[in-house]
Length: 282
Ligand SMILES: [Fe+2]
Ligand SMILES: [Fe+2]
Image (cartoon, rainbow, N blue to C red):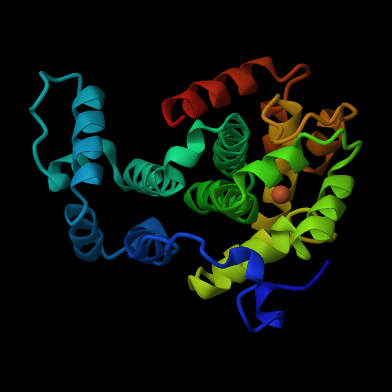
């Protein structure tokens, strides 16, 4: 599959009635696509300030991080100073996307998909540091790579949950089942949305192609997300009950040498770190 959403031109029927994506999230994704030093902090502050739920979550976390009496950090500026832009953008994107999923998250299957996205994001962020890639970009791409699945679960919770519950024997079989039921698979649907919501081009490509084998050449963000999606499955954060072979060694072999030590045999400490972070946002 090499197509992206632009090939269809019109919104597929399966995405009709999907709740409007929050404009603040679209703006933040575009803003945070820039390297940390180029992010317009004034715009970021303004966007965050318009969202009271986000402000209170940031203040809560900043106060916890500062080990200070509750209430010491009282402004977005101060929270940015205490937490740093990298952490703030991770919190902002994650909380806002989680809010978008809303009550659908009470459904066990959607919760599993959400945990898969978080595990992929945290794994990608950690590995990116040793792979000459931007950890913040890796986190965003990991969080959003299965956007099409999340959309299907929000729009068709029962039928998509049933589909994911199928006794599929491989990821490709699940993808074929998506096409049979919805005409398009979650990669195609996710990329339609990513184009419509004007995500950065690289992110659109990753959403469209994250189940395709990586091309040889320089290790890219797309390559990383292809691997961390599989790694999330290996760590027990799979979206469906597929019994997969052990792929950890194969995944490790494809990482740049400086990152290989992270995936120690058994993955215990890597998984423990990821689990701790996933738990924060479930
Ligand atoms: Fe996927
Ligand atoms: Fe995935």
